[in-house]
Length: 152
Length: 146
Image (cartoon, rainbow over all chains, first blue to last red; front, side, top):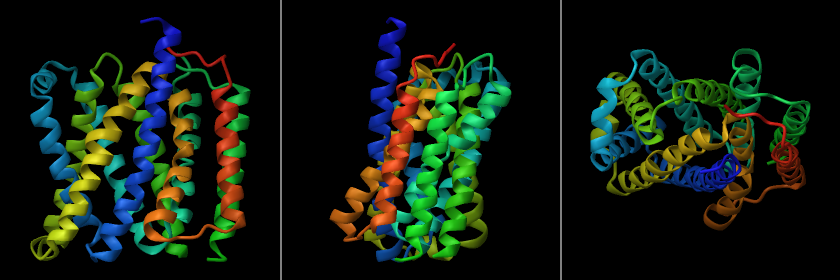
């Protein structure tokens, strides 16, 4: 596959992921608030079921984990732990504030990742001035959402 | 409300760090395998928290709440995370991560339809600005991905 095609496919998949994450916020809000399930319990059930499903459906590939470099596995475990903690905070936030307030704030996480990439991953990816400007505009959007949330 | 905003801000820092770690960890690894390692690690963390603080709540969980949790697991972890990691591998975190800024649009639409929430002028303006920022980033053809 050519580089342009790879980037295009990656972009389309990222949009699809964004739609799914959008739907998931509403599912979490409904499950946690309407059925009064503690966020941590709700997430544990979700993660347990998802892990089971992913291990079963991807078994031949999963077996290859033992051949992976330990450093890579540790990085992915670290990503899973930070993500697990973050998703717990996210669902707890949804338990306390409307979806229309929480989601735009959390959607600004690229600011953190791009800052880290800029300082530590320059050999892999380049953060241009335009990316920095776009990130700044998106950040101002979050400030609007926070101001707007005080009126809800 | 303010505690919700604080939790959401902490979550945004955590997700940002997670994306950074995934970007390094994904090199040379099948995205689906990487997503499984990541989801299983998140599950272990939550298992510890539930075992210590919420074992009674887990046992007394209503079946309907259980169904919503299963739905959340399938949509967020089994589908969205695998798709996202594949996207990271193909197009790089610099391009993919900002695309997730469109998430509030879909979340708002679904929240209006399903939950009956009504965003005000400031919130709509904020979402529009987030999308504008994303368009600026997506329009940049100078992003290099190794």
